Image (cartoon, rainbow, N blue to C red; front, top):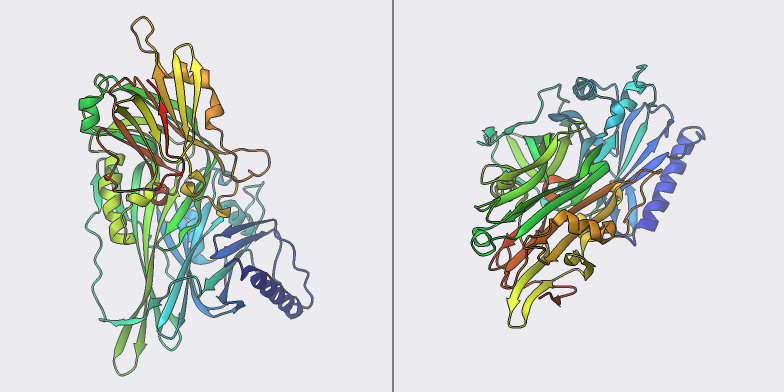
Length: 557
């Protein structure tokens, strides 16, 4: 993709020249902001018409990249609007360009869902879900993209007086079908009128509502070329509490590590982006963003007294809606008898809505909460819809352990450097996790997100009159410097977004055996979400091997 980019830019410039000539030397304005979505597309936002007579709304242009060549190409363009509780089918077309104005009947239906919430439009951004399907011979390519926008732009474009601080926007999407880098699907015949049934999972489970989130609003007409283009989408919605961070401990920890202190802390503040993930594509853009203030908060407990059974402690935000959208494309040929062909499919996981000033807190999960759902339900659904489990070796981004050896108690870590600080109460060891750049999956689609840090605080305490020192006192001696990792992206204006998760471990004594696996669940929930899995005998999944960057041992007693 990198070698093709200069040609892409040149081709876009040529297209722009053609547009200028076609519009009687119409002066094309400069975009006021742009977002690049991996290698799949680019979104430009304009305050005035980028093309003569184009209405405020969405304009999608499709380009085929093949080697060093890039040119506009006809493709099926299918547009959905995200709503607080589901998705709305807005428009379809077969062309190299599709224009969807804000006053489209189907888009107005989705906008009405947001307006009914009664919250200021400036308090959040939602998105459009766009699928581009290109076919050549018996091969097909489907590219999904999330296009962020603000509802206030649409209402001002429709002549509404509110919100007064919003102005209409023109959203131009350049979608790239790179046949050299994207794996195609085979177009194969299938049985006509095959019965599609809803998943047998709808209902309420442990506080979660699972439902069909394909909203029954107005539908765009089918597309007829030499055949009927027939897309289908299944939206599985989850409404309830979603985890920000968690720590899970096994029965072995309960039996072998009595007196161990654990403290789980978070600091999520500023504009938080929830990024959508798609099968085979990874991050495809931001589905929802809103200002939040979750932190600085911590919860502390002791193994053997506060908790006496295996389970999890987790921080959560409530009332959120998370969706899995499974998109399939078929074509129907009418000769003597109708023949249906399977074209391709992709699956998108996205957060649709998080209430403003959301209710958040921490709780314990002993088998019937969101962490159990992640281990049991999400993994199963991920296997079903994505083709791979949500939790596997690739989601473990760090290993660390306390091990009692013939040389004494040792702290071992895999991917991050170890630091230490002396306090009147003992030594504080810190591990800054390595590989977080890639673990977070940050991309240009996450404008305004700064990686604040992710760390272990390993606290080796000294006895003070026979009593353990509270973890928060020791943390005060260390300060926030242990969390510092250079910001990967520069936040816009003067605002700063911080996402931090820390696990403090105290009460480590000679003989402590504790194996810590750090799980990156961002690909499931869209938010940088991490879990710490604590075992007494081995790492999660009992890996036979893994690669370490640092592989350091530190003698601690």
